[in-house]
Image (tube, rainbow, N blue to C red; front, side):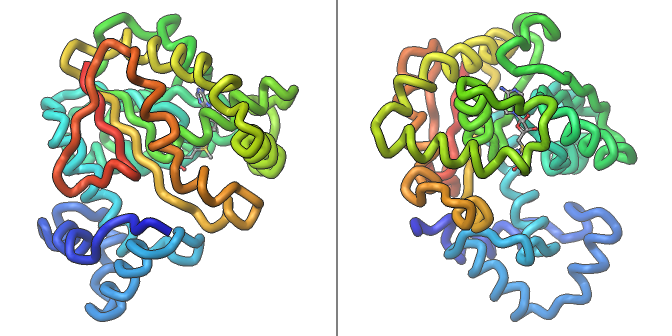
Length: 279
Ligand SMILES: C[S@@+](CC[C@H](N)C(=O)[O-])C[C@H]1O[C@@H](n2cnc3c(N)ncnc32)[C@H](O)[C@@H]1O
């Protein structure tokens, strides 16, 4: 696997500020009970290996949160920012990072799957940032938000989900009302077949660009797309093509060429796993 990060960079990130400034109380308690060499060993694993469920510890939380805090800063996200996430599922990592970036920020998610949306509502219930949930396809975002109204659009480990859902819907799956994780093996099989038989771009580039174009419309001039990806072992175990799983960002990068904005790079963020794009 291409490394997710260098150990030096990962270590710098977790040491960038005090853990108190970036962790919630229970997370901080977990951090403080872990020995320094155990923290280092876990960080090394995150850099070198696909992420496993059992490796979701507070070390990962802190590393991941610091990455996002730095990513927001690299985009120049202002105070009171409005951030739209596409395909959050039930994962609250972006609203939690925003809480540490600026409590007065406003978080919006466009998330299709009904059950996961309920999970997100539960997982964000006690956060101080304002939360708005749009239960719809992000391709329809202009039906919900006004043009030039958000400061950033985040795809946190969701470019793959958006592509898989598009292909799944084309193949007759109902990814909105169905159980996402029951449907996942089929979505993975469809995307693997499309990648291997060379039809991925023909099937997905146009609908993906339509979604990005609509998200670009709601972005303020100067606002950013922030896309991140990394490898879960779970998806590999379900049969994801390892090359595609690793190269999700490099695969879609050339598709963005005709959009009216520009990619930029940020020191410390590997373009293998991150894509920053300014309107
Ligand atoms: C597994 S969850 C995402 C998890 C999360 N991003 C993470 O950190 O791994 C995938 C979610 O993406 C949503 N999704 C996929 N395509 C979407 C689209 N076009 N618009 C909105 N949500 C979408 C699905 O409905 C589902 O809730």
